[in-house]
Length: 197
Image 1: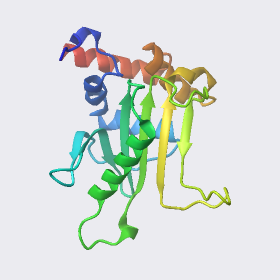
Image 2: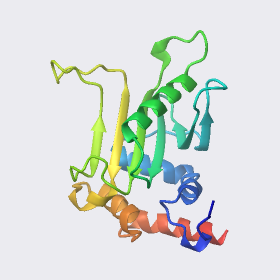
Image 3: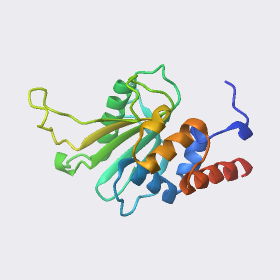
Image 4: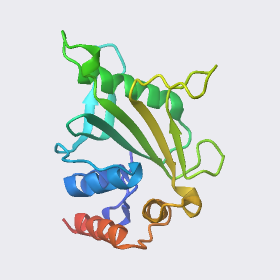
């Protein structure tokens, strides 16, 4: 296994992504920007959280796993287009749910969950900056299952198609490594500081 030299690491590399997202304020800001929501307070981000249910079963290692009072977020940076993203997301969702309930707890205690993949490629070749998936009824698309699970894939290559300027700037930074607003400049500074440290 070869390692990229530290001075070549970018925000999109697993190690650097984790180093920057360790900062709870940055992690919160990225989530609020991407999801267009307000988060009261995040618990400390868990990096490379491992979840394995049984000795023989396939476990997962989540890039960044965070919770607030009623939601749980898994944020993944994805550079490899050769994997099955939809089934990977399905499996991550099941593992997050498995990790969320203790024996004897009621299903109603499951927190709303967001599985978020930030990609530097377009997994569906539709040239959309964001693909959001929820469980809908096939016979009536207005009927949602309301299981409070959302899977979102951001395609950084389509940053110029994103109408929200903050999301566009973040996706552009992920795709080009060029900061264009105050927040992405701050991200870039954290990347450079992490290299020095």
